[in-house]
Structure formats: C-alpha cells, structure tokens
Length: 266
Image (cartoon, rainbow, N blue to C red; front, side, top):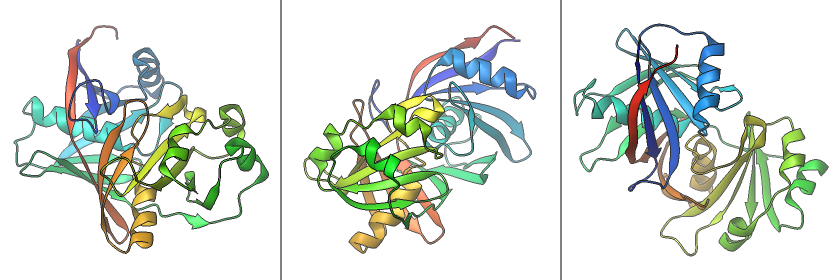
C-alpha cells in the first residue's frame, strides 16, 4: 500500500521558512519501530503520523531519534494537510488524540491555523552549574523550568541571536530542551526566542510551537496581557501568535506544503 506523504513548512507564510514537518497518513496502525524508522528516513525535526479514529485522528510525533509527547509545528502541519486534501471541510475543526490528550485545531477567517494546547508555565529555579556552562558568558536575567524544558531570559534580542550554547553539555542534562528568550527589538513581535534540543536529535529547532506553551504564560505575566506575538530567530525563522487562557494556550500560525508524494516501502 502506498501511503500519502507530505512535507509542510509550519509557522511559515512562504516556502522554505518556518519549521518543516513530514506528515504521513496511515491506513492502519503501525508499530512504533516502523514509525521511528520512517521518521529517521525523513530526517525532519518531526514526522507526524495520522490515523482516523472516531471523530478525529490519532496523532503521534517522532523526531529522527525518538517519539515525543507534544509537538506544535507538526500538529499545525497535520491540520493544514487535512484541510488541503479535503479530509475536513474548511470550517470543520481538526481533532487529534495524542499522548498529551485531546488537541484541537481550527482556521480563522484570515487563514491562520489556531491550536488549543496545554499551558506549561515555567517555575523559577536556581540554574544548575551545568546549565551555566552550557550558556557560557551570556547575561542571564531569569531561569525557570517546566516539566520539559529550561527557559532562560537573556538581556536583549542580539544576545539571543548570537548565542552559541554548548550542545554537548546540553545533551547531558535531563531535560527535553533549552528555550532562550528576550524582548523583541528588531522584529515586529513582543519577544524573540530560540530552542535547542540535542537529546531529541534536533540541535536547534527552527520554530517550536510547544515551547510557546511556556513562553506564552511567561511573557503574559511580564507584559500584563494575554495576546502576544513571538518570533523564533533561527536561521529559517518563524512567527507564532499566542493567546493565554488560564491552563490552556492558543497557538496560531500558517503553513505551506512544499512536497507531496507516496511512501512506497512498507
């Protein structure tokens, strides 16, 4: 059986920007090992696998080296594909059943795709020595942690852009990844960020939806408002709109399909 396969740039308004995700539409359940092998072959930051289930779709996400519990950009890419190939009507929400529970995506009138995700606010903490070594001489203004990542506030946008963390040391820390952020100065946004996750096989993620589950509540508290715009200043770059609603966050962005084909090997 040939399986539909798509490559989508998520949190992007034009091709070859944002964060690329592969999306594979399954015809039956597949083993975790098989999905991991396909994800390694795709060699994208994330590969999403969709299988129809009841009123929605089972959704699983894999990096090239392991499965993850939550991924924003591959969820956005998956919803985009379902509307593009008319598995869903334009005004019909996309419902996903995942390891992080039920997630929903919908499209606004201007074409932005919005997703309802759990908020993951950081808790202030003392930075461990190894984290300080990862960051080198970077001027740190705040360190916090949630169940997945460290969040580090730096002094300014330029510091975030030029940071060169020690990825070998970061890989030894018992966390998913490292978020660094600062107020936006040179881009039309409220804050900028970058995300590093070498333990997941992703040295630097181009645009990270799930990191904004942490960034959203953090910046909402600091700026005193619940609607925010973030820009991830990776080499590819991408914008994430954020609305904070208590224990949930709504993440918004656009997506572009850059490749469509068939997975031939079973």
